[in-house]
Image 1 (cartoon, rainbow, N blue to C red):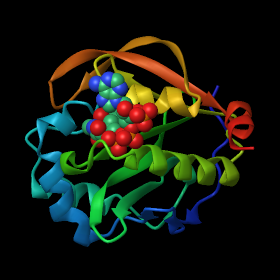
Image 2 (tube, protein in one colour):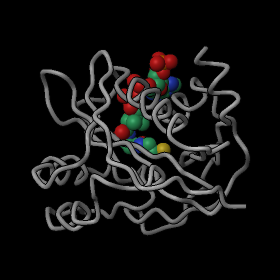
Image 3 (cartoon, rainbow, N blue to C red):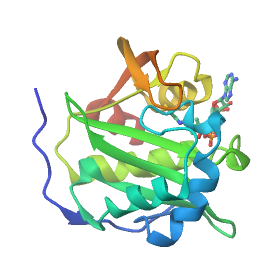
Length: 187
Ligand SMILES: CC(C)(COP(=O)(O)OP(=O)(O)OC[C@H]1O[C@@H](n2cnc3c(N)ncnc32)[C@H](O)[C@@H]1OP(=O)(O)O)[C@@H](O)C(=O)NCCC(=O)NCCS
């Protein structure tokens, strides 16, 4: 059963200790193309082709609008003092909102995505009536699964998901996070 979608809204700027999450801008295109044209990144994502061109980034950015439904919101992640590092966002899935994220490889391993995901989930649950947020990882993505498990996502099953960069269906660990678990962890 689909969750009721929240109304469109202007994306806020979300600030954390080390990060700024803001609406994507056309000027992000070159950084997106630079970091997504890396199989180490795109090979872990379902919907990103490889090789990835500047034209792909420009086309995707044209689909982004600062006023959007929360379950279609995407934020550019900037590290304070460093600038662009990656993206985090939601898309409407078959059962409800799905969260996804990626960082350019130079920025891995510093806890950036854990910090961004906490801030994004706080915002999303506060803005919507969604009882569950869905996600998951390709079966080899230990770092992403570690983030999700740390934050309270539980494994709900396995599926096969097309990975555009690999041009193949890949086994996927499906996960979900309930509002109840999130509230309990954040209080
Ligand atoms: C997955 C990704 C977002 C992680 O970002 P990050 O900022 O490096 O992640 P964090 O540092 O916040 O957390 C990673 C966690 O995984 C753990 N981890 C990383 N590699 C690991 C490994 N090989 N074995 C066990 N744990 C591992 C880290 O120790 C850390 O957990 P901790 O904070 O408890 O120590 C980043 O690697 C990335 O963008 N990858 C390519 C795209 C992608 O996979 N997106 C997600 C698709 S589901």
